[in-house]
Image (cartoon, rainbow, N blue to C red):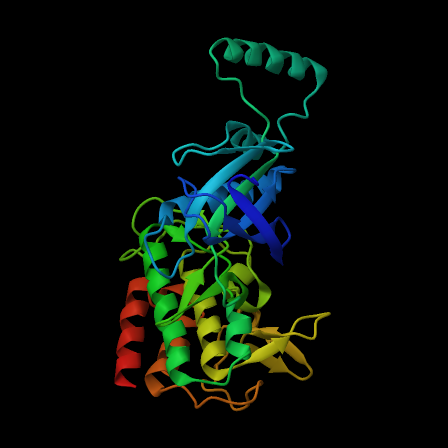
Length: 357
């Protein structure tokens, strides 16, 4: 690693991996000398985590560097020893990781008889020069975003209508791109939107594709009738059909984005349990308790949301969104997934609403 990238400091940590700020040491296929990159280390220690890694890698390869508002994957390295790293070809996946995800157990932890069979097969492969190696970790090298995540970016600055509109415009464009490729993100939230600060203004980057799913075929027109079933995401952004444990489609992403847009436009925040740090997110108040919108709609599909909110949470307060944006938010947050706009329709309506404003 040291010959190609130098790790500078840890910049993020999640349930499955750690993200470092790094620098390119020498110009080559891995980048240009001096460039700053983000490097995520994903330890391959359990079938559940490995399945998420493969989903993230697959989705990021599909997006490549094709859209300015989706985080770019530069390289993927496979770690097969304490200091042994090798690049993973763009059309390849580590076979032992695929086998682990399919079997539901780490493939090198087998019974003695299974181990003998594997040893025989490995000897056969060794004669062909294709001896498989155990993958200890994947290292994803991505573009570095110096503005932090969307929570930090919005809440560390005074309210600004043009800035908020840029967030909405750029993320609606990213969603149209992802859904056009057949990628359902399934965990859209401010913490998974990173910000790059450029001379021409902030650039939003949709990131963290560990929970994403890829669907064959276009998702516009028929609204992607392929049903997903895994309950996943973050409470304050999950759609009502996901909360209910029903099958759902890519339209669940539109609901999540609606919660995010509403929170950004009206600067609505909440405190997570056990944390004193404000997070962007819309909700329904029930006495002292805050109920995520998806959960509230799951409990009462006839619930009428009030947009703009009568009370907002994080002063200084921005002006209320325009009537066109309020109407769009209500459509994005509809209980019925088919009543929500598709990603392409959303992009068109966002552009119209912002231009009219």
